[in-house]
Length: 336
Image 1 (cartoon, one colour):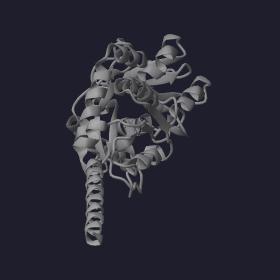
Image 2 (cartoon, helix red, strand yellow):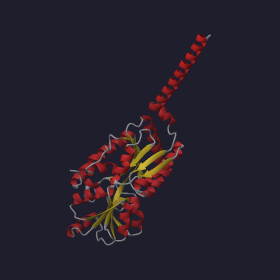
Image 3 (cartoon, one colour):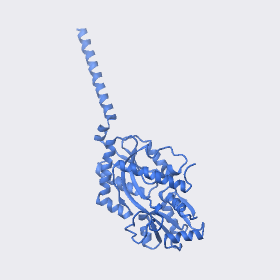
Image 4 (cartoon, one colour):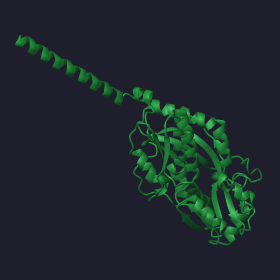
């Protein structure tokens, strides 16, 4: 009888151990099975890091996207601003996050500027991230204050060359307008004083106060001021004229075909994020960008929706890196 009881106890222990192993194996399988992760995604709130300050165009578009994404996913999607280092601080934070789709990074040109201009960047803008997709695109506009006598790009260049160092140009440090302005200086050969700010909106405030003379930024930022006559638009950077500024020529029309770069924004995930999650998010943000509500919101900001597959975004980033690294070398900003 004792042997029988012992045998039963041993059998129970073996069965319990077997069931425990099976359960553990199931958990491990769930954790490391991308398909299983995608089926349950998202099971908790999603964090979207914006590596720039609040109120920037990237920040505004990120918040519009996050709000719409939350509705489509039925899960909280919140935005965190991690400014500093020209976007490097927030980008590094996202890079170090788990590759599970719960920490994402919303970027623009800052993503390719930091590696082009910083001496030390401890992340790779291509290898350390999984492109999800683009959301919006647009052009920059070059504006001047009322006190600047120039009425065209040609007149601005001529005036700056007659008065070297007199014009003051303001920009948000490490932003798209920053490096674009450096490219502008190098391409036109003008000498203008530089005043950097922590963010672009600060430069706009000082421009209205007459402390700086010229600025480069997205159309939506300046459109109300242009319509009120407080600033004057000289040229837009896109390949075609902006519908909100139909009388303002493009850089190419002004004779500077190498200055036709523009604004773009998109969503990234840490490298090795499961393809199923990346593709799911790509479908969602593409649908958001094409929605009438998002189109209307982007239009008010001076942007247009831009959609595409993850590989399309990857190709765009590679092209932009090449262009802006060349621009940084031309402007003397490339790390030595």
